Every structure is written in structure tokens, then in C-alpha cells.
Amino acid sequence: MPHVYAMRIRAGTDRGDLGRVTVSRRVRCSPQLASLALVLSFTVEAATQKVGSIPVPGTKAFPESITSTSDGALFVGRLGDGGIVRVNPRTAESTVFIQPGASGSRSILGVFADEASSTLWVCSNDLSALGGSAAGSDTWSALKSFDLNTGDAKHSFSLPGSHAFCNDITVDGKGSVYVTDSANPTILKLSAGATTFDVFAQDPAFSAPQIGGAGLDGIAFGSDDNLYVTTYTAGELLRVEVKDGRARRVTKLSGNHHLQFPDALRSLGDNSFLLIEGSGRLDRVVIRGDAFAVTPIHDGFVTPTSVARIGTTAWVSEGQLAFFFDPSKKRLSPSLPFRIYAVPLRKEDSK
Image 1 (cartoon, one colour):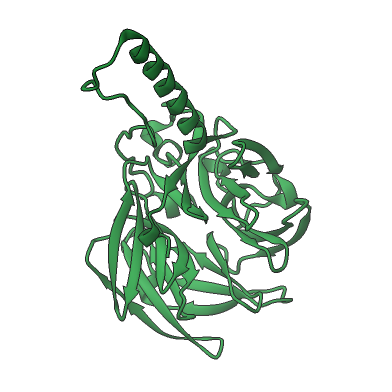
Image 2: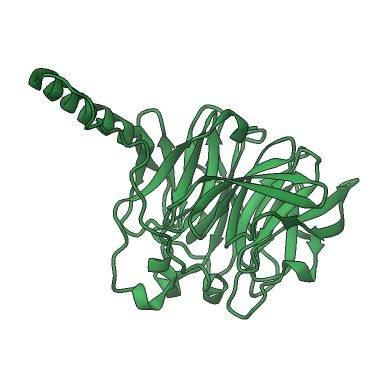
């Protein structure tokens, strides 16, 4: 379904380096001290940049989703090259953890680390017509599972229907997996131990507002045990009430800020979330009743796609997706290497 992400072509504005350190011109000191300060400033800046952003291998990586584990590891799915990269943020070392084409996979979108079952859940879609990975054999949309420690393939589950688009993933306390289908107004559920999906929730509010737009995208459970989802093109945040394991009322929430291409959603606590806006921003969102309040954390990314939290740091994947989906930019080159960025979280932004 190449047209599903046709609206994901909006590029952000240029951004400065995260954590840049400079020396004030107002400081009066001797030439020797000035030289020392200059050397130290370059040293600190280089060290800051080393941990402030980490390159993602692959000239066509186009990172789409990112997830983390309690030991501090990051896993990044690649839309263009396929496969999944494992990153150690402490050393900035990145390795291809799951090879392109593994278990029949093609372009990788959502990734979710489920440590309780030692499983890395992965959304795979065939975007080879747009230049995405053709290493795998699948020509359909599927949810894949891999061993979280070894990367060995476990299972592959095809999404129902001929025009499905597996986008993002979350897991409940019983091990059931929930998937957003961007091409259809449905949230799918794969119960623990099951081999086929059930339709967990279906609602017109999940639909894209126009042909060629993207519908459902990010998905996460709140601290109230209800399910929250975003719709990319429509710019909506919605709550799916969950009672006794079943979906109940779907509510479109009203906010103090109009969301622009809301993407990944990651739970923090006290019904607050980290939220990516594809227009270029990382936000903190707090839900109160049927309303939400947005606090911007960092702006200026070029089509950010996802976020994962490790302690007091949010890691943001920058997709630069205009160069993948926009035909007019196919002959242009994205800024290489692709990167994930570390954004320090204030105390109030991490809970």
C-alpha cells in the first residue's frame, strides 16, 4: 500500500546540533587561557555530539521506529534498507541485529521490545515499489516476532485483508499484541498463543480523511489501562476504552494544540506520553478526562518518526521520509548518515 504514507512527505526545518557548547566572547582572559578554553570547548562539543546523536548504518536506512529495553539497548527498524539495527547508546556502537529479509521481512516499520516474553515484535510491509527492501519474500503486510536476545526468527503473522498496513505495536500485561492498521480503520489484536488476528476495535474516526492519507499510527496503553492511538493525516489523538479485555467507547480527545502528523506514542506514567509529531517535534502529552495538554520538548527534526525512552533521555529516530515517499525528491539525497538523537528530559517531562 504505497499510497498509505503519501502524506508522510513533509520535511522539517534545519536544526542545530543537540547539546552544542560554545565559549562566550564576553569572557576576558589571557591568550593562554583563551587557547585552553577553545581546546576544551571543541573537546566538550565533540563528546557531546558523540552521545547526542548516533548514526544508523545504511545509505537507505530511513529509520521508522525505535524501541528500548531495560538494559539500555535500542532497536531501530529501517524502512529503506530493511532489517533492524541494535544500538548501544553508551558506546554509540550500532550493529545490524536482524538482517534484511529475515523471516521474509521487507520494509520495517513498528518495532516493540516485549521483555516479558523476550520477543521483538516487528511490522513488515512490502514497499519495494518505492525503493524499499526487496530482500525478503513477503509481498504482504505481516507482524513478525524475533528473539530479543539472539535475533532468531520466531513467527510471522499475516494481517487480514489484501490491503493491510502494519504500522505500530503495543503489548498488554497478558502478552496480547495490538497493531494499528494504517490502511484500514481497525486496531488488530493477536492474543497470547494465537495464530490469527481478531479485530479489537473498528471505528470511522480511525480513517484517513482523504484518499492517499494515512490513518491509524501510534499506539500505547495509558496508566488508566485504556488504549490510546494517533491518526497521522487527520492529526487526532483518540482513546479506546478497555473493559474486561474488550474495546468499548472510542473518544476523540480535544487538545490545546493542533497536532501535525502525530506518529509514535510512548507511555510515561500518570496518563502522560511522549509523542512524535512528523512535522518536526517531540512532545509530552498529558491526558485529563476527554482533553489533552501538549508541552513541546524539542523541535527542528526532519520528519521524526518514533521515540524510545531510556531513563531521563528520549531517543528520537529521524526518518527524512520525504526522500523516500516524495517522487519529486527521489533524485535528491537525504542527509547522511541517518541518525537517532538523544534529547534530555526534564524531571517534569519524564513522568
